[in-house]
Length: 266
Image 1 (tube, rainbow, N blue to C red):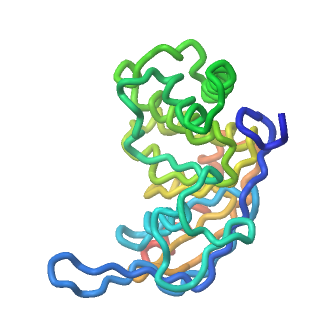
Image 2: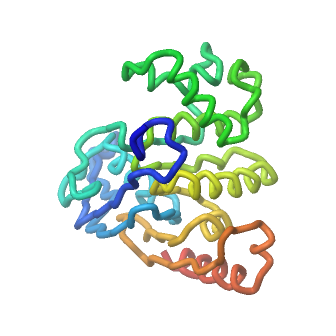
């Protein structure tokens, strides 16, 4: 199978993102006034990078993710994926939301292989590919279960497997673990890093948690309050592989403290 195609567990042909002077506005439904969500945002995200995104509520984090996904288009500026303008949703990008968005009438294997079947992959091959990605996220043996039979953490693993199964260049994650308890969230943080290492997919991950952003990211992007713009891009120099015990080190505590101080001035 060709490198980076669906079902490949090696490193994918990851996405490189360029945002140049991106501006996005909305109209307030109540009084019609203009709301500037993003203004002059310029950013580069390297191929195979894990970028975490922090900022106060309403700073444009989800708007930026929607533009990268192709769900929305900027009013001005440009956004490129590997040099090609992003104008609409596409299979080269996977999206994971907080609410899982699984089909309740399909079992988890059928949920994961759904997109492959829609693209014309035969049942046997799509089933095998789905099983490999379910194994990657630790769900072997649960293929015939339905979403309502799984915990929140397990359902989010299904959502991640479904997003990765088509071999996307870019994985966009909008607070995917925000509704989970702290222990489950910590476990999924570690597992997500293992998946990222296995696939090499570029990840942009929105969170409200300073500790999650510092633990996961190679860089942490902090957006200023509305209108959203880059406040600071903070490199993370923690070693790899990362383990939760790192959060008790002086380096991590200093990093989290710096992120908090920047957020307080946003």
